[in-house]
Length: 207
Ligand code: URA
Image: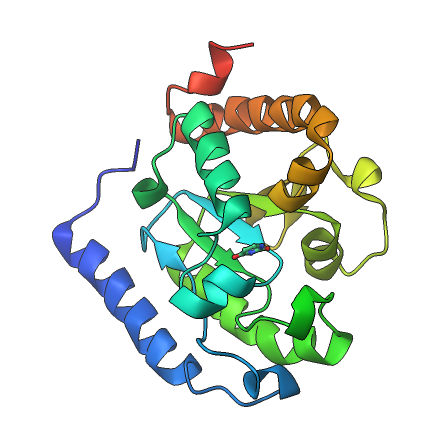
Protein backbone atom coordinates (compact mmCIF):
# COMPACT_ATOMS: atom_id res chain seq x y z
CA UNK A 1 0.00 0.00 0.00
CA UNK A 2 1.48 3.32 -1.00
CA UNK A 3 1.63 6.16 1.49
CA UNK A 4 -1.04 8.75 0.74
CA UNK A 5 0.42 11.49 -1.41
CA UNK A 6 -0.96 14.37 -3.36
CA UNK A 7 -1.32 14.18 -7.12
CA UNK A 8 1.17 17.03 -7.27
CA UNK A 9 3.88 15.03 -5.46
CA UNK A 10 3.22 12.05 -7.70
CA UNK A 11 3.53 14.10 -10.89
CA UNK A 12 6.60 15.87 -9.68
CA UNK A 13 8.45 12.58 -9.09
CA UNK A 14 7.42 11.18 -12.47
CA UNK A 15 8.42 14.45 -14.11
CA UNK A 16 11.83 14.34 -12.45
CA UNK A 17 12.31 10.75 -13.59
CA UNK A 18 11.35 11.72 -17.13
CA UNK A 19 13.85 14.59 -17.05
CA UNK A 20 16.57 12.26 -15.75
CA UNK A 21 15.73 9.75 -18.49
CA UNK A 22 15.95 12.51 -21.12
CA UNK A 23 19.45 13.38 -19.85
CA UNK A 24 20.55 9.76 -19.57
CA UNK A 25 19.23 8.11 -22.71
CA UNK A 26 21.96 9.34 -25.04
CA UNK A 27 24.73 8.39 -22.57
CA UNK A 28 28.03 7.47 -24.22
CA UNK A 29 30.19 7.34 -21.08
CA UNK A 30 31.40 3.80 -21.73
CA UNK A 31 31.99 1.45 -24.62
CA UNK A 32 28.85 -0.67 -24.27
CA UNK A 33 26.81 2.29 -25.49
CA UNK A 34 28.21 1.42 -28.94
CA UNK A 35 26.60 -2.03 -29.05
CA UNK A 36 23.27 -1.27 -27.36
CA UNK A 37 19.97 -1.19 -29.19
CA UNK A 38 18.22 0.62 -26.38
CA UNK A 39 19.12 2.43 -23.18
CA UNK A 40 17.19 0.52 -20.49
CA UNK A 41 16.54 3.21 -17.90
CA UNK A 42 14.04 1.44 -15.62
CA UNK A 43 10.29 1.64 -15.10
CA UNK A 44 7.48 1.61 -12.60
CA UNK A 45 5.98 3.71 -9.87
CA UNK A 46 7.94 6.96 -9.52
CA UNK A 47 7.17 7.01 -5.79
CA UNK A 48 7.46 3.32 -5.05
CA UNK A 49 8.21 2.34 -1.48
CA UNK A 50 9.77 -0.85 -2.83
CA UNK A 51 12.41 -0.82 -5.55
CA UNK A 52 14.23 -3.68 -7.29
CA UNK A 53 17.80 -3.46 -8.60
CA UNK A 54 19.10 -6.04 -11.07
CA UNK A 55 22.45 -6.30 -12.80
CA UNK A 56 22.15 -5.28 -16.44
CA UNK A 57 19.77 -5.67 -19.38
CA UNK A 58 19.86 -8.90 -21.37
CA UNK A 59 18.96 -9.40 -25.04
CA UNK A 60 15.17 -8.98 -24.64
CA UNK A 61 15.58 -5.91 -22.46
CA UNK A 62 18.05 -4.40 -24.94
CA UNK A 63 15.59 -5.05 -27.77
CA UNK A 64 12.57 -3.61 -25.94
CA UNK A 65 14.15 -0.87 -23.81
CA UNK A 66 12.40 -2.28 -20.70
CA UNK A 67 13.98 -3.98 -17.67
CA UNK A 68 13.29 -7.60 -16.79
CA UNK A 69 11.03 -8.62 -19.66
CA UNK A 70 12.78 -11.87 -20.65
CA UNK A 71 12.75 -15.22 -18.82
CA UNK A 72 14.36 -13.70 -15.71
CA UNK A 73 11.71 -10.98 -15.80
CA UNK A 74 8.88 -13.50 -15.94
CA UNK A 75 10.28 -15.17 -12.85
CA UNK A 76 10.75 -11.79 -11.16
CA UNK A 77 7.07 -11.00 -11.87
CA UNK A 78 6.09 -14.25 -10.13
CA UNK A 79 8.29 -13.43 -7.14
CA UNK A 80 6.75 -9.95 -6.89
CA UNK A 81 3.27 -11.37 -7.21
CA UNK A 82 3.95 -13.94 -4.48
CA UNK A 83 5.12 -11.09 -2.25
CA UNK A 84 1.86 -9.24 -2.94
CA UNK A 85 3.16 -6.63 -5.38
CA UNK A 86 2.09 -5.83 -8.91
CA UNK A 87 4.77 -4.72 -11.32
CA UNK A 88 3.11 -1.30 -11.61
CA UNK A 89 3.37 -0.76 -7.86
CA UNK A 90 7.15 -1.09 -7.68
CA UNK A 91 10.10 0.49 -9.46
CA UNK A 92 12.48 -1.82 -11.37
CA UNK A 93 15.92 -0.87 -12.64
CA UNK A 94 19.45 -2.16 -13.07
CA UNK A 95 23.00 -1.22 -12.12
CA UNK A 96 23.92 -0.94 -15.83
CA UNK A 97 21.51 0.67 -18.24
CA UNK A 98 23.01 -0.92 -21.36
CA UNK A 99 23.51 -4.58 -22.23
CA UNK A 100 27.08 -5.83 -21.89
CA UNK A 101 27.95 -7.73 -25.10
CA UNK A 102 27.17 -11.44 -24.72
CA UNK A 103 25.73 -10.73 -21.25
CA UNK A 104 29.21 -10.70 -19.71
CA UNK A 105 29.66 -9.29 -16.21
CA UNK A 106 29.83 -5.49 -16.01
CA UNK A 107 33.35 -4.03 -15.91
CA UNK A 108 34.38 -1.71 -13.10
CA UNK A 109 34.65 1.30 -15.43
CA UNK A 110 31.16 0.64 -16.82
CA UNK A 111 29.72 0.42 -13.32
CA UNK A 112 31.39 3.67 -12.29
CA UNK A 113 30.12 5.53 -15.37
CA UNK A 114 26.60 4.20 -14.96
CA UNK A 115 26.12 4.48 -11.20
CA UNK A 116 25.15 8.19 -11.18
CA UNK A 117 22.00 7.33 -13.17
CA UNK A 118 20.95 4.76 -10.54
CA UNK A 119 21.75 7.15 -7.70
CA UNK A 120 19.63 9.79 -9.44
CA UNK A 121 16.73 7.35 -9.71
CA UNK A 122 17.00 6.48 -6.01
CA UNK A 123 17.03 10.15 -5.02
CA UNK A 124 13.81 10.73 -6.93
CA UNK A 125 11.90 7.54 -6.07
CA UNK A 126 13.10 7.46 -2.43
CA UNK A 127 12.10 3.84 -1.76
CA UNK A 128 11.94 2.56 1.80
CA UNK A 129 13.05 -0.96 0.92
CA UNK A 130 15.32 -2.14 -1.89
CA UNK A 131 15.61 -5.71 -3.19
CA UNK A 132 18.99 -6.36 -4.77
CA UNK A 133 19.14 -9.27 -7.19
CA UNK A 134 22.35 -11.27 -7.31
CA UNK A 135 25.95 -11.03 -6.20
CA UNK A 136 27.16 -8.64 -8.91
CA UNK A 137 24.51 -6.02 -8.11
CA UNK A 138 25.04 -6.43 -4.34
CA UNK A 139 28.86 -6.24 -4.59
CA UNK A 140 28.45 -3.05 -6.64
CA UNK A 141 26.06 -1.39 -4.21
CA UNK A 142 28.04 -2.26 -1.08
CA UNK A 143 31.50 -1.97 -2.66
CA UNK A 144 32.51 -5.41 -1.35
CA UNK A 145 33.45 -8.82 -2.72
CA UNK A 146 31.36 -10.93 -0.35
CA UNK A 147 29.57 -14.06 -1.51
CA UNK A 148 25.80 -13.94 -1.92
CA UNK A 149 25.49 -16.33 1.04
CA UNK A 150 27.25 -13.83 3.28
CA UNK A 151 24.94 -10.98 2.21
CA UNK A 152 21.46 -12.54 2.13
CA UNK A 153 19.17 -13.33 5.07
CA UNK A 154 19.41 -9.93 6.74
CA UNK A 155 18.68 -6.26 6.26
CA UNK A 156 21.65 -4.13 5.23
CA UNK A 157 21.45 -0.38 5.56
CA UNK A 158 22.90 1.54 2.60
CA UNK A 159 22.53 5.32 2.49
CA UNK A 160 18.97 5.92 3.73
CA UNK A 161 17.68 2.61 2.35
CA UNK A 162 17.01 -0.79 3.93
CA UNK A 163 18.32 -3.37 1.46
CA UNK A 164 17.67 -7.08 1.12
CA UNK A 165 19.72 -9.30 -1.15
CA UNK A 166 18.58 -12.46 -2.84
CA UNK A 167 19.45 -14.71 -5.78
CA UNK A 168 19.23 -13.27 -9.27
CA UNK A 169 16.25 -14.82 -11.14
CA UNK A 170 18.65 -16.02 -13.87
CA UNK A 171 20.54 -17.97 -11.20
CA UNK A 172 17.23 -19.40 -9.95
CA UNK A 173 16.38 -20.55 -13.47
CA UNK A 174 19.70 -22.43 -13.58
CA UNK A 175 19.43 -23.68 -9.98
CA UNK A 176 15.75 -24.19 -9.07
CA UNK A 177 16.81 -25.70 -5.72
CA UNK A 178 17.73 -22.15 -4.61
CA UNK A 179 14.11 -20.97 -4.91
CA UNK A 180 13.36 -21.99 -1.32
CA UNK A 181 16.14 -19.71 -0.06
CA UNK A 182 14.86 -16.90 -2.26
CA UNK A 183 11.38 -17.28 -0.80
CA UNK A 184 12.84 -17.10 2.72
CA UNK A 185 14.61 -13.86 1.74
CA UNK A 186 11.35 -12.44 0.35
CA UNK A 187 9.41 -13.36 3.49
CA UNK A 188 12.03 -11.72 5.66
CA UNK A 189 11.95 -8.62 3.49
CA UNK A 190 8.15 -8.45 3.50
CA UNK A 191 8.01 -8.73 7.29
CA UNK A 192 10.31 -5.71 7.44
CA UNK A 193 8.41 -3.88 4.72
CA UNK A 194 5.14 -4.38 6.56
CA UNK A 195 6.59 -2.88 9.72
CA UNK A 196 7.85 0.15 7.78
CA UNK A 197 5.03 0.67 5.31
CA UNK A 198 2.04 -1.23 6.70
CA UNK A 199 1.43 -3.41 3.66
CA UNK A 200 -0.32 -6.73 4.18
CA UNK A 201 2.10 -9.16 2.71
CA UNK A 202 1.05 -12.21 0.73
CA UNK A 203 4.47 -13.56 1.69
CA UNK A 204 3.39 -13.84 5.30
CA UNK A 205 0.46 -16.09 4.55
CA UNK A 206 2.14 -18.64 2.29
CA UNK A 207 4.76 -21.27 2.85
N1 URA B 1 18.79 -9.44 -15.82
C1 URA B 1 18.97 -8.28 -15.14
O1 URA B 1 19.78 -8.20 -14.20
N2 URA B 1 18.26 -7.23 -15.52
C2 URA B 1 17.38 -7.25 -16.51
O2 URA B 1 16.76 -6.23 -16.78
C3 URA B 1 17.19 -8.48 -17.18
C4 URA B 1 17.90 -9.56 -16.82
